[in-house]
Length: 383
Image (cartoon, rainbow, N blue to C red; front, top):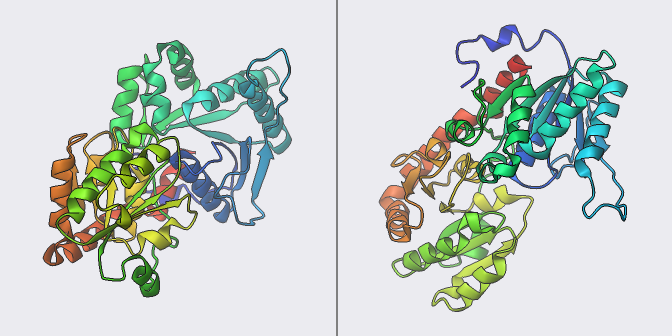
């Protein structure tokens, strides 16, 4: 991890900076982390300027140091697709010049890093030096990396960035494996705002969901194929066959209809509830007994960490960055992709009354390593 040999307190209060943050404004992990990072930096006295096509979902507070700049673009008949990257580049140039940004921190390689690098060269012609931090979050490497047509642009963008970071050791290695980039990559993990994910369970809410003290299993995702939500249902079916249980599915996406059909043909379908997108996911996690994340790939596993912060142990696959977050045998268990039989067996072991409280305590304790106040100084030192 970056900064392990530094006394960060020497650096972080020396000056306030003007920082630009480019991110996707959605509920996805990269957008959430970027927004929470910006809010924390603003609280420390830095001026933070968000640049995106919509206001980030978590940018829901007023702070005199927080600013949002919308990237607007027109659909011309000449273009089959709107040229968002060009509009983003122009907006970056405009904001850097108007607000004299010191640092531009882009989250996601495509198209954000590419746009930032182009803006950097445009500004250099006017004698303006822009420093770029590029943070890799996952699918910008693991999915885009499989499309070789993007490789030259991504590699060039990484080389032209002043600093490159990744959210896990696994993602760092994936970057070296998929791209012709051999520069340094600093690993700075994702983090949790424990003021938010430290809710006391609401007993009346739990009684509504599990009136007969059934165990509550939870999964949250964007319901894409890579999340393997049908495996969640298969795990639940095996658990429910052995012990009374309920399953809460949070989120929405292209696989939801398929999963709904799967549940309708499930013997235990009455125990499955689709909750759709939820902003206050911590309220639901606070009443949960187990979190399921059987993904095909996860660069980090922020959803798992959020569950652990709410004292919820995790059953996950052992892919990507998940084993770095979910410690096998301590905070839960990990398994090979698709091994629903083992995952169900692990779930049943955790859910036993004599085991559950210990796993809950261990999950919470491990999650504390990812406190915002532990990670924020690493970014400030890097800046």
